Length: 363
Image 1 (cartoon, rainbow, N blue to C red):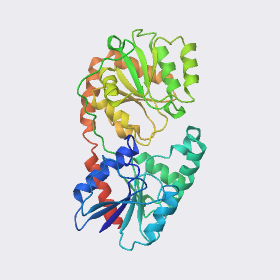
Image 2: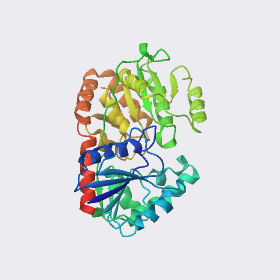
Image 3: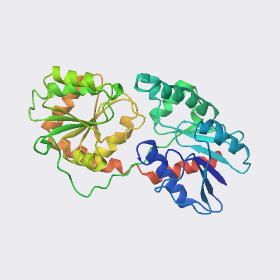
Image 4: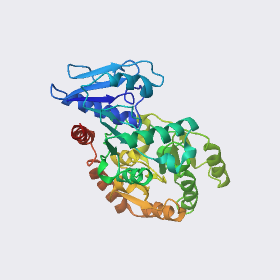
């Protein structure tokens, strides 16, 4: 059997999100490659040093030109191959594979709910290329039950044509805890992590934090993530609520520094209206950081019984969760203990093994 894979998401220097997903799958496939199960990884650029090494049963094919690669270079090459049994696309955009059956992973359909979060060029690709991939795939993989429901809702795909395979999780190894800026080592603080986008619901957290501070005045709020066009509005809101000394926009931070934030935070809050999976929930749990999460999309599916949940449209609901966590040390301990158990349920090996099984069945 020959399994072909679009490996471009993994073949990048900075590993985040879908890049991590694709890399971990390729690492597992590399371990399982044999004369009976061969892999061909298609790329548009030279192989990065972190990629698994080639061998007789795990090989790379670099196709040019990189421009319009999935619409031109790759489909033309696939027409010449009669021996490929299945083609796997780890992220939405499947090539025209002709008679080769394809499997496509769909991570989320947030562009239906929050189109303003995307550049027009990216939105066009997400809408049109994803639709083609979904409609022509022999089988689909959804990273959560929530994403599966969205695929059925927006594309009318039969339930049996979609398999749910949860993302894995791997804790970042950090040697030493770093000293945090803004005097955070001596103040309890609530932590948020994510790009400043409307669907992250940051304004609700800031308003809820303002009300929480009436009861607990020593706490601060730290928002980690790239600043974007929403930053000015959030900064204005922070100023209007007289919170400039208590709300910290930390911007992007490296993994080792982020781990220190998780370790020292009073709690982590995931307030999103929509998430395809929600890896930061598991990240926080891995550092014994209690989690407060919105009760929407995939988040209860990921957090299970190891988080407090609130209505993301209700500031008062979030304030109650903050206060409950501040008043009840036993609750904090319970969430921490459950979080340690929860992260054990998500592994990249399990994710890759289930994915490989689907590829074989589809072939």
